Image 1 (spheres, rainbow, N blue to C red):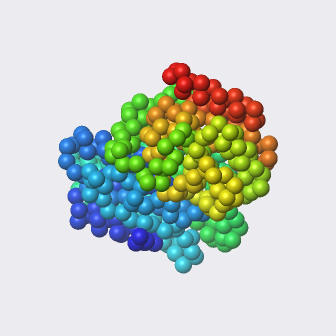
Image 2 (cartoon, helix red, strand yellow):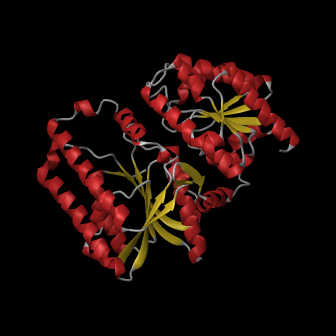
Image 3 (cartoon, rainbow, N blue to C red):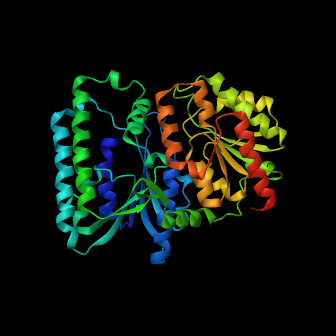
Length: 413
């Protein structure tokens, strides 16, 4: 993995765009983002009927480092792709105020150049990004060669269920991700961050109002409702269906009998719940599944420590810890009876992509913690996605939900 500093990415990307003939550029952080890129690029491949040229920029997560790599992508089979791993930015005082002004001016000038050149026919460059277009992209179009060669087409892909959460959720999430980093910054660094944030908000406002953005989100917002976006869902299903006979060796022991996926999340790592309380709930759920003769595929979140689950592995012979590198959506095609978790995106995508039922036990978890972010997440999850999952606030309710699922499987309904 060749990493580059964030300060060097602009020059490096301009060089690639100038010397190569790219069809798309994508900005991602997580494996689920990679799946969204795969789905869109596969549609492009089918549309144009030839191998595409692309650049994927993998950004470092603020707290967890790099959680995605080339192995998470399927599009490399129908596209020639360069991967750049970009380290998270450092707001060092060495950059100086002049540097900040220069960056902001390049963004604004690039934005104006793209807008002015909208009506000129050039090569389409699909810009694939999560939830919103990164404003730093417009620095690329301040370059004479790049603006004379490409016309950007903006594409918005899904972040996961966070895409549909409110501002309060994201404000808290950002605070948890930074985990005290704010307090260690100088006043000058904080001023710079505020300036960049304000510039970002202004540019994003104009992006949304000045350019057509193709939405490849899984849901479409209609009034107060979220409706499945069939175009996007079909694209995800198509890419997941590629090489669906390639069964990962790790899951062979699982699928020899009936099995269930448990999608864990990094609540302990983020200090949202005590490890003992968290494991106690998991063991209670797994005990029910053991009684019903299920194998359990425990899939750790990409940003959590696997060591947390050693005690479960030692106690429960029917539990298999899957590699964090596996994408849950890739496992659903092997027909688990259900997906169990808290507020994981997989609880909803399992239903939408493969008709695999799911059970959320987030309300059981809330009985052991009053964490603000978990509370907000649970409230919004229930409000927006209740129709796609069973909600269990007790072990009895969980048992009943599981019995309903088993009965539906047995009757074929």
